[in-house]
Image (cartoon, helix red, strand yellow):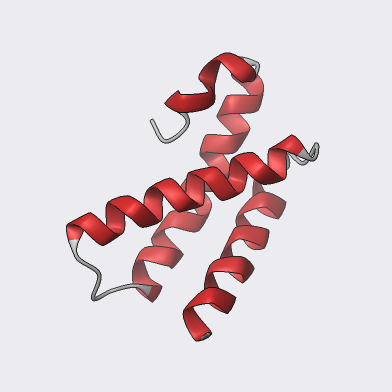
Length: 80
């Protein structure tokens, strides 16, 4: 579970929404980083989870919005 490190900080319904956001964004990020090694993918998974948690700390819990925000951030970093 990508959010086990913060599971005590959120209600089960909130964790469900964070996980849904992760599941929406992850396939697209994986495609974008297609040549990444397993180690790099693990790091990307952690970065994505941390990014989603950072957005949730600001009160955002809508999965689609969280996923789109994460995708924009990861796409911008990839292009840089």
